Image 1 (cartoon, protein in one colour):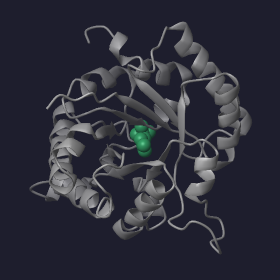
Image 2 (cartoon, helix red, strand yellow):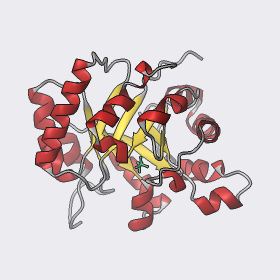
Image 3 (cartoon, rainbow, N blue to C red):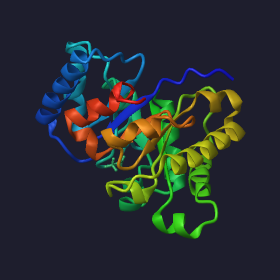
Amino acid sequence: MVTTRTPLMAGNWKMNFNHLQAIAFVQKLAWTLKDAGHDYEEVEAAVFPPFTDIRSVQTIVDADKLKLGYGAQDLSQHDSGAYTGDVSGEFLAQLGAKYVLVGHSERRTLHDETDEVCRAKVNAAVRHGLVPVLCVGESLEQRESLEDPASVSVEQLKAGLADVQAGAEVVIAYEPVWAIGTGEVATSEQAQEVCASIRRAVSELLGEEAAANVRILYGGSVKPGNVASIMREPDIDGALVGGASLSVEDFSSIIRYRSHVGV
Ligand code: PGA
């Protein structure tokens, strides 16, 4: 099957940058990419700022007609009502957000988000026209003790996408928990193996066409120095970048991985 998956480089800022810092960062990133002649049709780029920055990012993107995408790091599973502190997907869609992360390991561990909650959040995202970026991945203990560590991601994927229809756009991010923020990156072979299992699971769940079209990102200590080898793997269609997405120099270099020597 011929595929036309456009790579996606996604910058997860986590709880970094206030709205003024966000404006400065996005402007500098856009200039840097423009100077380098970056073609967003070739490699898509998006940032995932804290909620409080999204309106500011939208203003810059609209005013300067930037092709940079943006999304949120979380959303409520509900649409509106008595959910103090939560943010509806409807509000995010109103702010022009295209994507929203669901089930990042920090949400799963620090906020006890279960697979059931993730499923409800994926559904809420789709309901509001947002593209959910469902994050899956095994812990160090699971990697060391399980015969097939990919099964953790596959189970999380099946649970998260259980109600999704074949036509809906979703992105999957495989992030081994032991590689997040640790500097310890999965080898490209390890990442490929799990991403291939994920694609097979999408095929079983949503059909071959959905599996051919779904973008699967790798996340966990992605840096300018390792992105090119990760991107050479056939089932990896981009990266979810944490720490390195906070530096214009590093993130723009990751987005421009095709210009790296030897790629
Ligand atoms: P990292 O984070 O790139 O800092 O490892 C990745 C993530 O948590 O999305």
